[in-house]
Length: 412
Image (cartoon, rainbow, N blue to C red):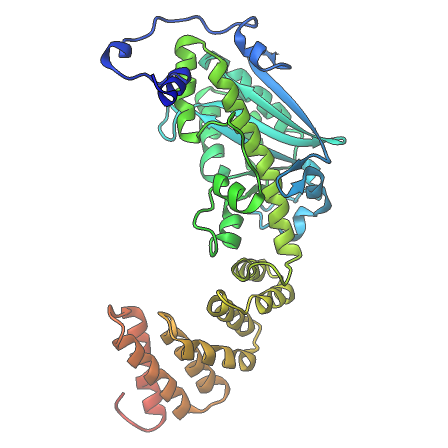
């Protein structure tokens, strides 16, 4: 047996028909099981519905995870830069937030359960990472109950893809386990899903914005051999339920713990990028930040950031974003040379920039012949770049007809 086969055997992966027979049922691990032995400090947390396994790790604020110490997040005011989708009052400190990450029995379906829910929160001079674990399905009501009790003391949530995955899953589990409605009210808290701003800022430069990719390419986080691939986690848990072998489960705790710590570092990097962009930052990052700042209404800051981004390889997207920002402020005269630059460079949006110039000369300079000339160039560009952009082509033809009538003509 080679090393790879031995490692897979230890993880519970088997090959061959003889080894595919169902394993005999094994009782759920008890307080004396290897789970507690492998995870010192773990405890069974009682609850009126039963109990679940809970493990805490305490990290001092000076602990560094990748590029930043944990304490760095507390230097930022979340209300200054984070676009929450909730209308309620925003927390004024990250001490009032709860980081959350789940490990599940699968990726879809009504029967999918969160067998581990990891949370992290600031308390005193430390960050507490708390992980709730199901020794079996019967522990789920206790896990959900403890989770709600903790979340009730918080005013906001932070996740990575939690808005699309973790929270809808938990919401469904509260419903299926008939938890009292008030226990799930925390699911409506202001929620910062780090995946979406990470994509806004870094997708122009990075090939992937998965948490693992961000750790390697941005956060300077290196996981050890204790980690386990996320796709393999449901298999390890299924094997645990069949046989009670807790050794691979310790690796899932490690994986979940690192996910939570990396969220803290990622939040620090995001906030630094949006509040303090530096001239030596990558221009594609600056372009993403500038666009995000503009969407947040931070107009002056967005303009400064986009001007910093006006260098290769971000010259074209930064120029387009800056021109759009100036236009929205009514500063079209300043946007004109930028649109002219974009027209000269030429790309799939060249006709759009032609039309911006046409609108400027028609409505703001009242130079109809010049507006007609720019619109004609837009038509020529669209016609020479198949497939036609039908809505844009119709707009151009309509505009040309109107401009021709203004000039006293009858044709395009």
